[in-house]
Length: 85
Length: 181
Image (cartoon, rainbow over all chains, first blue to last red; front, side, top):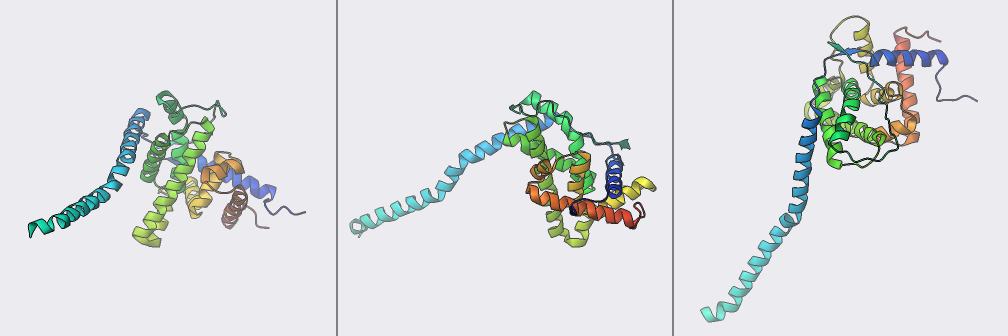
């Protein structure tokens, strides 16, 4: 039975040899950053993530607080209207 | 110019579960960063993009704080990097249009000779095909490992990898590197 997922042996060898050449291609020098530099950057980002997560419920509640304050002020004004006039 | 031969990463403790602390990260980084850079560079064809993507991938890995073995960290890292490559390609495509985005994959080598021909031929493939072939042949990953690295299904990998190999075979045939049937 034909295995549709196989190339011929020669083709497979040629593909593998080509990929070996690709992996051995010369390339520009890699000036990779220091591991500790990345480590501290990630720690800082993690802290900001944590702060954002902690701040999120407060940020979400802020419009609700403002709306509740305005509603309370309107209600008090409504109650005090007969005394004002 | 520095010859970069992508090394196959040897994981000493594939099943060990560890916390990615400072010392573990330093050791893991020195083992994987060069190979990951080579992978991203060959997939994107751009050294600056490869620098950015590799840094971002390591940062994201650390931010997640995955408690696993080295092999899981490595797969997760490749998955992040592969996603970042696709994101960057899409972003560039949106901003600069199809034609400019195609240049994303253009080989940076302007030299002559065999190496430049090999780089140009490889760059003819799509970024997904390049990623699949690199992981299969250079990193010597199994279908399961490639699926984990690229975030795709194992069955899809088999088909996609076959198509990528067939496409590369056709390219090599068209250049006379394989005898035509």
